[in-house]
Length: 122
Image (tube, rainbow, N blue to C red; front, side):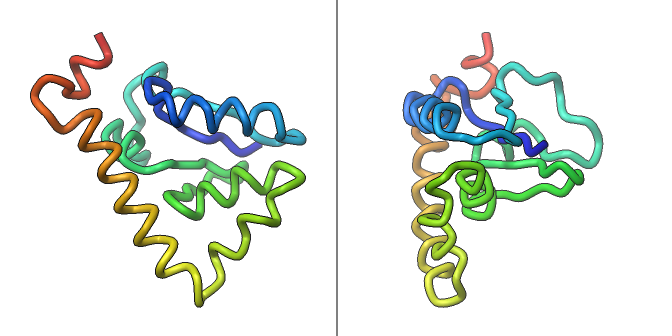
């Protein structure tokens, strides 16, 4: 069973998870980062989990960013639409776009003094 870790306080993330939940065909669980205990040694820390999408595969491997997103969508009947994002020609561009978007989303939600991670969790 794969587990997708997501930011449960992000409206966009909540919509994507709702869509994935509805479309998935099994084998994918969801974990809100804000509802998880502090990560164990060797696991990504809370900031990393909030900054980029993370998926822990059934065999214990961690996938991040675009790889995690494509793997999560592979649990749906439309997963084939996401696979080209990992092709060698498209991946570098898609990764840059995803990482810039993820950094902006994170900075907007958590990097200012008013909306620090600790404040959001209270």
